[in-house]
Length: 563
Image (cartoon, rainbow, N blue to C red; front, side, top):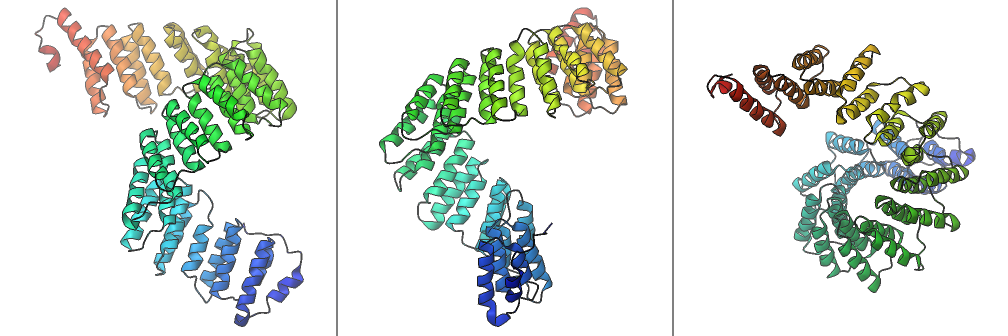
């Protein structure tokens, strides 16, 4: 894991080993120089001789800053076996260099410190909270924030910033942290912390809270381009395109200069509801000195696709091709998705031809093309595209199901094309394929075909799941085949499947349609014993059973309740 290529200059490495404690500063300087030149093997060779703790600390910090976190952890492990144990600085540097997704390792190192009776300082907690922030573990970040307060450590601006950034999925917690910072410091937080809180409100679609924070920051230190970006994004995610446009206009009147990210966010915010405003905004931005990048173009392409403006999407895409902006795979896919909305499958094929000249098509681009080609008169076209995907090594099943969904529409017979597609591609139909076809037959009241498919999947040794049984039970209910529905329910239990609320509702429906009301009431009781709470559908079924029972049975009205 920690193998590193041999150093080109081994003579220097031998010279570095000659020093002792009296050369600690020289060794540390040499470590820094080796780190700048990325000669990690030389740094390791320096430590073949015992070194002081502070030399190890310099090395851990050096390799950590150069994203060599595995080497940093190896140094820390070496220190634990040396005569001089690691100190707080050692652990702080090791935690700080951990990459995204290694929050558990950060917490392990924090626990190790406590095990050897090292007292973590505020830098330790800042680094641990930052590790949780990278993994969006806001719950752990808040727990660490509470721990450091219990230890009477004083949070810094960095502490609050990391904790607020960790709370992007918990906007209320982010706002509380901002207020705690004001209360503890007696000062307004910095713009970065305000921006992080506004971003959390945007993530939670709390546009009013975001604008309140924006106004507070604007009235004190002033909003920067990040502030405007986060506030506009908050408005866009809450479908408040007019407020987003107003913020953009205010920014243009101020001294704040827009950047590529802000332009992309503004176009997306307006396009969520008003495609015409988004197109106008995009046109205005194109006239500015700021050159719009690929992300901004992808955003407006997505707006055109969402609002079925496929011709505008093609015009913008061709403008990208003719300019110095190189479209990405996402650009091609987004343009093809716009073609799907307009049933412009020929234009989508032309886009794929252009893509093949520029780059290797991605799986998402093929799926977008398949969706666009669902409007083509010949099903063989989709099959040809699926064969291309298979030759390119892409996973086909999801693409086949997506294509079949669009091709079928409301045509239950068209849904059965999924089986011919799978067979021609030498892929045996699985339970998902059968469920897909049965669902279309059921939606179109082709209940006999649903039962045929259910029998066929068992003949082909495809094990049905809960969804399969529910489709078959529903078909039995519509045919008033109460006993058959009960038999299917028993089969589910025998093969280890757990009937859900939908299963019981359809069996009760089947029994009710077959006038077997006592059995229907018994199933209701059985469902409750299984821990399934009746739904609105169940309640309506029960009312229907009670009405039918009273109309056809000579017994008193209280009889159904006793049963």
